[in-house]
Length: 157
Image 1 (cartoon, rainbow, N blue to C red):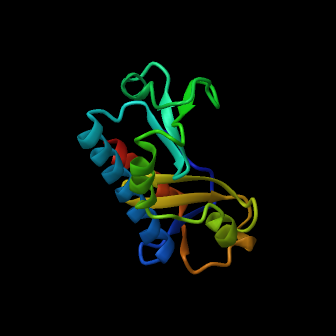
Image 2: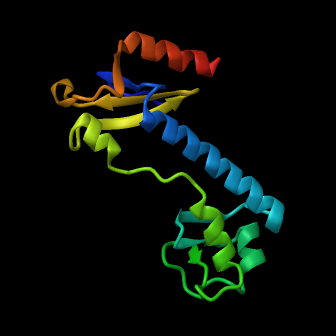
Image 3: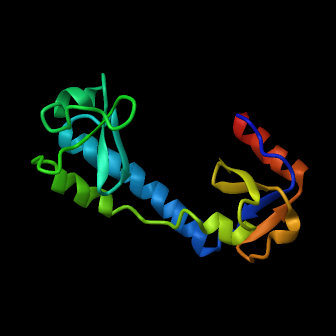
């Protein structure tokens, strides 16, 4: 496991952003469990958003759905479902139940392009930032680098 560079901020567990991210993680795990129960496997299934999902070539999901996917890959080894597939609408409905979060929220909180990365350490969500003066949000808390490293080491034990 790699670490972030200082300065470090932690997203407050009381913030709506944190709660939304936790809900999204739960929803994604629930989706894949439901998918596996319904179709027998989830190995190789990939989704980007409710309108764009498919399977990776050479996986169990590829073999299961090979008649329901496009003949040519959109990306390397990624085959999207046909819009007319008998499974398309039901899988799309399952994906739409996943909590939606704004992908630009980190830019709003830390400043445009002012964060170097993020990392989940257990149930704590950390961000490394480039310049502390642009961080103006109450949703994040500055964390001492040694405290952050201690949290990382505790999860490795």
